[in-house]
Image (cartoon, rainbow, N blue to C red; front, side, top):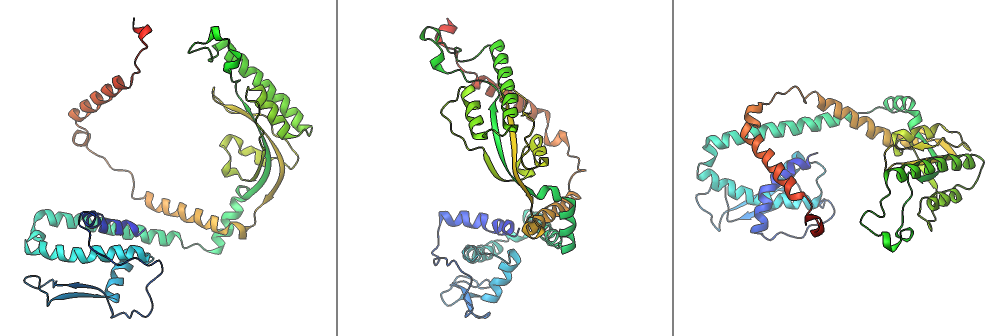
Amino acid sequence: MRFQRVAGLLIASLAWGQAAPSPVPAAATTGPETEVAPDDAVITINGFCPDGPEPSAACKTVITRAQFEKLTDALDPDMPLSVRLKVANAYARNLRMAAAAEKRGLDKTPAFNEEMRYARLQLLSQDLRRALQEDANNISDADLENYYKRNESSFEQATVARIFIPNARQKTSAAVSKADVTPNALQPDAAQKKADQEAMAQLATDLRARAANGEDPDKLQIEAYTAAGIPGTHPNTRMEKVRRENLPPSHEKVMNLRPGETSEVISDPGSAGAHFIYIMISKETLTLDAVKTEIRTQISSQRFRDSLNQFLGDVVYSDTYFNPPSARQATAHRHQKNRKTEQPAQPADERN
């Protein structure tokens, strides 16, 4: 959460630093060494004193570990050391630039006051988000147990076999004579398409009956692909660790099957749809201990979303200001221009 604030601190300074890099030591991957005492210097800016008239070799600014970690802990208590180094580099540069800006009186301008007002709103909002997240993370064992009992079916886990039957047959080029090869030769007409779909739907019904009688689902799957014009495919129909949340909504009822049972044919709508048959191989309900982390995450996420919802909505924006007629006309013109550009060119024989 606090990385948002770190990003806000670094965006301008790091972007500037890419154009004019300053040497920094290589970043370590572990936390600060414990032998660095709180009053030990971790950043030393030579030739700079914030209150000094001009940069001087005799002047320097020292930031101790305690002072620097007061900043990093406010930004993100769990900040990795590699990010701390970037913050240190930006902090040193910003101290110098801020001092120069103050000498120019840039901190006395109306624009700066407005920037500070808006920055305060952002920081308070970020701090509130952090507090709300901490509240949402305060989950008791009773909360976990109640959620588990209310949603026990969602923690069922199954091993199933799934047979996939395409909704239509593929028309291969081998089935089309050379004399018939045209841009639309491989595209079936409406009547043929309907007949193919009806044939595949009947095949799904037949395969379902055979699956219910105990035939090998892998063998049935190969037959389905062959009938659809996709021969030579050797699929594995077995699916393990299947849960309701992993299935499409129309397929969730499969989890109600008992081991050994076969589902009815599930047909997805549309020309690009398909038919599905499931055979329940085994099923278990995961224990509370096995899903505590998952439940904790779900409760926390839901509570956090609910707490944020009170700050959303019920806001009216002036359409006259934010979307004036001139802007709407420009958008409509741009969309019309894009549509003309995206139109494919006609073949030469069609233009003549």
